[in-house]
Amino acid sequence: MHRSDNTAGPTGTCHRAFSVLVSLCIGGFLSACSGGDSSGGSSGGQGDVTAGTDAGFTVIVSDAPGSGFNDPTPAAPVGGNNATTVGEQRMAVIQEAARTWTSVLDIRVDIALDIRFADLECDRLSAVVGVTRPVSVFRDFRGAPTADTWYVSALANNLAGVDLEPNQNDIEVMFNRRIGGDDCLRGVSYYYGFDQNADFNQVDLLHIVLHELGHGLGFVSLIDPSTGALLSNLNDTFTRNLRDAEFTPYAQLSNAQRLAAITSQTLWGGAAVSAGMGTLDFGTVTVGGATAVPLFTPSSVDQGSSLSHWSAALEPNELMEPNTPVPGIRLLSALDMGSMLDIGWPLKDADQDGDGMPNEWEVLNGTDPRVADAGEDADGDTLSNAQELGFATAANRADSDGDQLSDADELQRYNTDPTKADTDADGIPDNLDR
Ligand SMILES: [Zn+2]
Image 1: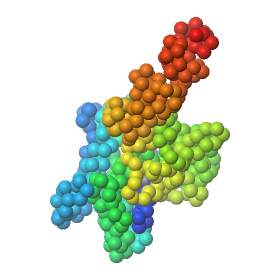
Image 2: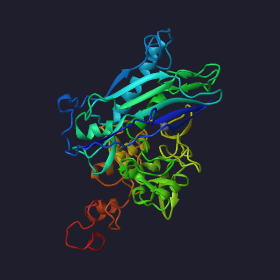
Image 3: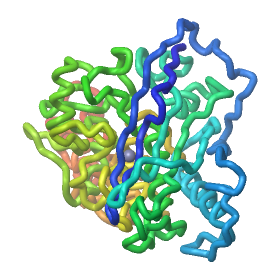
Image 4: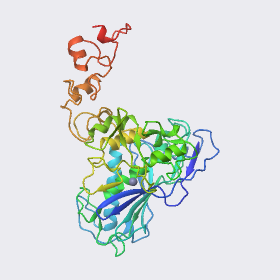
């Protein structure tokens, strides 16, 4: 097993607010320091398993008494947050965000989340609101799905089924305590409600925490955006999904080619997002007949934002976009869940919209996990989405098995299996053999 420390100071992602616009950025960078231990899961942690179906986030507050998350200033209830002090309301937002991600991700090993308020970069017009650091990344641990590939520690632990490094935090997030001061977005304040109802001059902390946790969970590029170099010359599970404008996987590109893609066009090639992108109204890109969701790749590298976010053009607004008007972000969308699936997270067997179709099935079938759409017919083959689930056919392809007969025709006219192109396995496809 190899691990890599994130030793380059406050790194990972940061969340920048421009008055009413919130944008997100990446600070420093992971530095590589692979250990020599390649013996698989033999590293520490076996005795400290905190695995199980109830695993979630373990929150560690690093603020001094009386400040940040310990701020004792009385606070009135707001937007469903009924805690009675500023510090407790902030903590309640953290817990709400943790609950939200935990409701969809199958988290099996507790994630150690370290939080505090700190003096972050700020001026009158813009501010870094939050900085996230996935503390370390691992590869070639026992349970790693793909060899020679980096995984952020929260995901690596989950895949290994054990805390690979029990004495180390997994995700560290800092929030800017200067917001609203004379020299820092004067007049702007944090909003601690859970209802996405922040005023124009408020920064919705729940949105920020959800976004930052998304980075901490693995929605983060480990590529050095100034050189195009992979971390220790190895792929990572986020980068594995990236394609250049020709749909060439990033790992097959040279540093120079990656750098070109980082500053022009990069597309997400992962299967789950590709299936779920039909829930977008706007912002996908079609190149050479293929359609994909683009990443944020401004022409001059933004160390703070490039590559680790969706394109800012997506509509409706997605959680992992770099610039997001608040409110109005879709939470736990097909892209949120799809990107986590593509990165390697298992999803819970949950049904967010209560329409009888599990989240994962919805994402992979292009239906909307946020909308009760069981009665609709996404692919227009006359079978409802719910019927497609029942028949194990695809809701987003009228001809699931590609034998040129629609699912409905196979079921209702030809009595053939809509999931097998050659139902009777006689070597003749169903469309020629009915
Ligand atoms: Zn971000």
